[in-house]
Image (tube, rainbow, N blue to C red):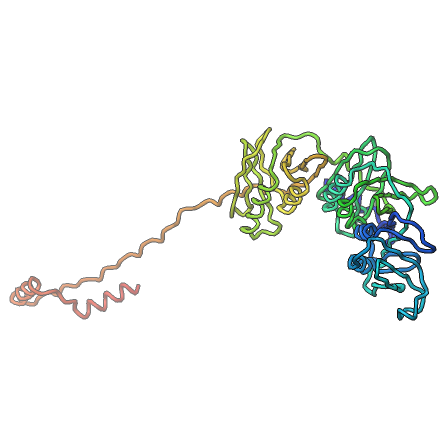
Length: 436
């Protein structure tokens, strides 16, 4: 699985300016015109600015820092009705003499100049604020469901610039379903929602950053695909009751992911995400192996999660079916899979060396396992060869012959009562024998 994705994505070389999509934000609030300006509810303006992702706001031809304007509007008290109109300033009450924006809210009046609350470090991303008498949309997706689906898949996009197309999320609508797909060459995530319509586009993950949080605050969401006939570029439009997002799709074709999802399995097990994450965390503290790979022994209604260096193991009760199996997974990959699935997670295994499939409601994640080396045979223990014991060499004993019978008698008596003494000549012979 990993090799196929890496191979297909590696050939999609693109110039730097076409690797990422372009996000265009439009803030739509209800209000009424007042000359060249408008009158609206302050809280509606705060809600729209709070959900925007750009750092700058284009308001009646003026550029303002979004966070600064948001902080100012929040600090205003009193009336909830706010009036914003272009002005040339009022020298009698303000130091602002040039063209500016006049903001009136209750008893508070302020004059905002162009590029207020912006600086050199402010990113050049813009959002445009528009006021309409009425703005409504017809939703075709659930805001919370779409938010959760995007959060699940964006984790598994690639961070390597050599595979630009894998840095994006593929949105593919067909046959009443909307697939959101992400892959990094070793993992493939697919979140599916019910959707009427057709279209395909790849949106860079950086352009989607913050969208999940903004969608959680939205009540109505509508997603649509648009194609520019002249440029043949596809655009994705996402509308809420306050903001309209529009992205330009990335260049290049996304790899065919459908054939990479396995369908036949020999073993299946249901894991509780929280308990399994605790087991992985405890092993990570014990082991000093990089990446914390873990072995999963599955069968007989239990799962044993063990560190590869035999420093620890945890046994969990689980619903198992099929053949007993032992598989090795990257601990970080396993933790990411459990967090993305949440709750009860179903793990399906073909073979220990083939891609595994994690499944939860409307979510599938394919993960490549790690190679499990064959156990090395124990070294044969050979019996120790004892060194031969040194041969003790007894010193030579020399008996002196007595010259007379009297001397013989004296010698015999001395041998019985006293310890015999080695003659000097005998000692010399004995040392020479030991030396040799």
